[in-house]
Image (cartoon, rainbow, N blue to C red):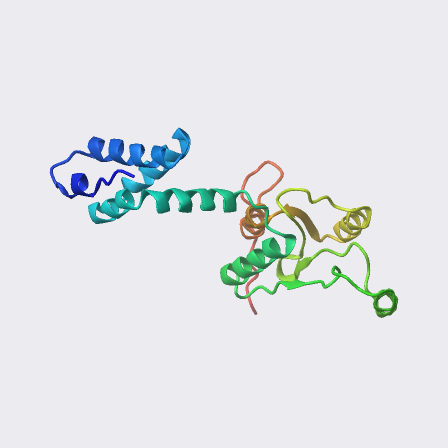
Length: 203
């Protein structure tokens, strides 16, 4: 493996020389051109001292890049997506409660019978935020589909004025919630114009 440390230690070398040197080092490690470009773009935003380290440890840089790339493709579980949403929601809206319905999970036949007798109902949404009158049905970013019982629950609660969303992961849930909260805080009429709510004077 060629060592480029001395080349980079020369403070007079141009950025292009550094890019070429790092590209050659990463190519030696087997990285594709698209991956090499990403690493080089990242490196150009780092201090020169950090660049030196990256060049002299190209093998480790390549290995870390491949690991990060592999991890980014992993689909998080519904639990992980829901936990991320609850964390964000409670931090963003500390005065608005959000809580989970423990309707899922593995149970013995006896436990299922007991919970049905206690009032557990199939299809109830995973999360509820009463302050926004909002139910959230969480799914993974890929592969999650609402069941017939969940759709029936949606139709039931919406008939009473509640809101229900199906979220494909944390990011999707967050975007939908932000839109709903905006519509609550900044109501508009059917033409899209702001609604002005007349404030009653206290007597």
